[in-house]
Length: 593
Image (cartoon, rainbow, N blue to C red):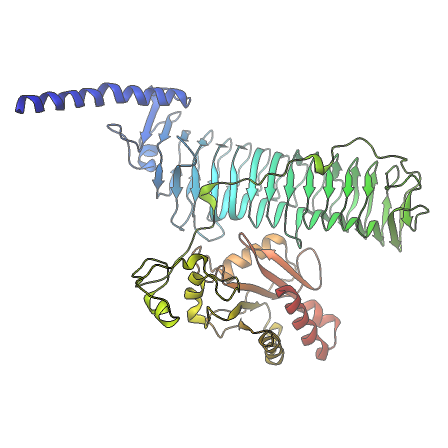
């Protein structure tokens, strides 16, 4: 018997020492790595590393590290020029446990492939991957559930075939130039791509949906955007927003069912070519922007085709038809809209002489003669497939905070006894919402500390303010709560009474990026697992709202529309004191719905 056991152990040893290395060698070869310079992490091979960072520490420049499926709770520093390659991005995960950055790349000519990065920290400098070295390549990766996805503060990098979801900012390019980003997908992010003082970049073949803003250019010049499809964006934000930027070219893009398709503010010399804007709130919006050109574009079924304020721009050889209100509106502006099709051989209506899409100008001019007698041949949005990108690893995670939960249904025994549930019988609380107020029972359990009732509708709102006198008055808070009470809804306004609500940093002008930072710093307090997320709406009482001056503005701070700003400072500069409270309360009510 002992002899047989020895023979068995020898055979196993032979298999491990000869057959398994051959399997690993074949895998290395299939992944494009030579077996002589390849290190392995995870899996079951003899001598494989259990930590990615340990493999990085032992590697040399030019080596390849293959990572087998699993969840690796690490914070990587890649200080050597390596290829770090996962076997499968859908099952090979680097998880930062909501602290600092998942990976920082300090060595040039580094390649990261086929990995999922999730849950880095919630501070402004935390990211899933930060590339501070040039010539970094990121391919086939998934980024999700964090404040910042990919942070590029270097140049000449390449990012392709990646998916970004549930992020404050998907790709953040800070003083980063001559990068190539292609075949990227974005879903449910506050900002999909942010370029800050970044130039000469190529952004190609993007797909995005349910984002607050798909592309935000701030002081970024001579970039190219081509062959992109963006749809189902936030109504109050812009799919593409160009701020104080020059010489950018957007071509062959399809923007469908967004708020503002393209907005330009204080920007000059940009071109929008061969693109389609359909069924949006607005097609193109110019404000204080001049010498920009829209050429051979489709405007179809938008509320408003082109709006121009204090600007001088060209909209040439374009199809402008079937807008719900006006084809073009100009205010203190000049728009050269010649050689365009207006939906009728008789030309535009309104101040035009025909019956097509109407035009209107105040203290300026819209030039429209001559016009086209037929539409030009172009691909319309109805011929483009809008497919939502998905990843099973990027769904919003269920955050449960219950202690003493005997039946494991995510609600505490105490809460279940309080509201008539059996604490020893499992209930599907995640999908139970008996009062139909949008909070499931798991969220109701969390919100119990703030006075929620699972059988009576509750709305929770946290209010922050930039100046002490911006706070809502007690009179109008009482009016608001009374109004909701008349509809059998309890409105909980937290301006300090429920543990939130505070005076925050004062800032006169806000950008879209600023409101995302305020959301993370002052509402979530840099905590990915803040229990208020998903329960409270968040309101900022500020001087003026982004991209506009007055009124209210709903925004996405992370992955859903749960925040809005109110331009209290503007209101108080325009209205008598006895009127401002009414205006602010009315806008508050409107934005809250």
